[in-house]
Image (tube, rainbow, N blue to C red; front, side, top):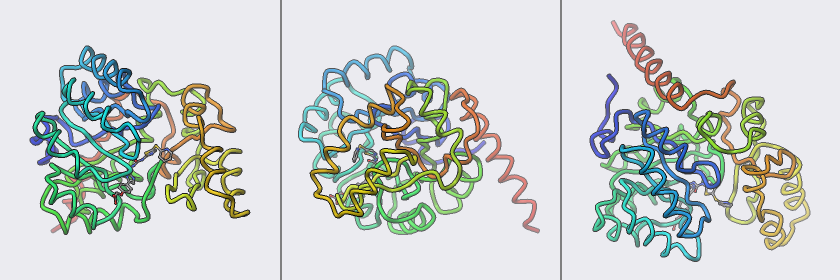
Length: 314
Ligand code: TUI
């Protein structure tokens, strides 16, 4: 049985996190992942605090297992979301797009574990010093907002430099990625794109179909000049973003073009002009499955792979 320190730390059966994804991971997906033995995570995104409270309550109605909330830290009203999470109480908070340091004590006082997503070693060290319970080292293969390092290079360098458990994210969707992550020094994995293409994920079917049809080169990084690069599936919108880069457009134009586009992808299924944030590993995902099948299959296949692999060592 494949167990790791992260399972003990949060009280989960399998060391598999479902990435918290704005507009894509609601209470339904999160509770399904937690019920299947992983850690389900509600992506708060730009939800107003009262909606986040509702989502947390719905998750609690649907699972008695630990689950988490992901907070995007650059939001102007982040303190209200932090207070909402604290007043409702969840097991884990993961954070993205900013420095979790100022919030860690507040969460710990409420009995909530804090696991920041980090794209670089320097930030990993800072977060460990600030009291983070574990880290999610996310490579630029991921969908959505990304850093510059690949998972292959980031995870071992983070693992080398911190003493807390490291979860590998970015470019993982099957047993190969899971086994590789363990080799790189990770205690577990986080998957986003794989969980979008599941029956329990409530995004529009068009987004799921785009992932299922995607091949290895069907994502692209947009928005680099804004300082917030974002990996998305290629479509007419991503082309418009790249045209802005070519003409050295003002940052305001990127912001205007981006408004409402993640919602357009997730809710309206606008495959031409929606922002279908997905990772480079989309090409390996060939069908929509249930969350339980995804988790049980990857656990079994990873264990089989490791057992067979060891037979090569004489
Ligand atoms: O946060 C993510 N992925 C996301 S957030 C998101 S919503 C969004 N929509 C449009 C534009 C931008 C974002 C979609 N996908 N992943 C975790 C992550 N965090 N990746 C990179 C970072 C990060 C970057 C800089 C974390 C910390 C940081 O710097 C902190 C500091 O103070 O130095």
